[in-house]
Length: 102
Image (cartoon, rainbow, N blue to C red; front, side):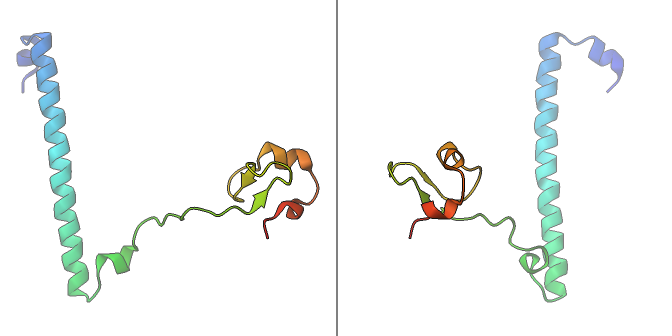
């Protein structure tokens, strides 16, 4: 498209064109990804493998963590052992094992 054609377009026409171009780009990316996945699957199958065997199953997520530590006076204050230590546990100081749930 020549620049002269763009210069003659109104703002609304330019925005409509922008939306159409962005939609076309997204559709083309999706199509090319599918084609590439199919090619990879065909190559892997030809060699006797699956794509999952070659590249893994993706990111594995952890399940919900159980409670590992509990405040002795307030049972609602707990910690799973993941992430930052809660304030009540930091304030208690010392060995945190004394708060471990049996």
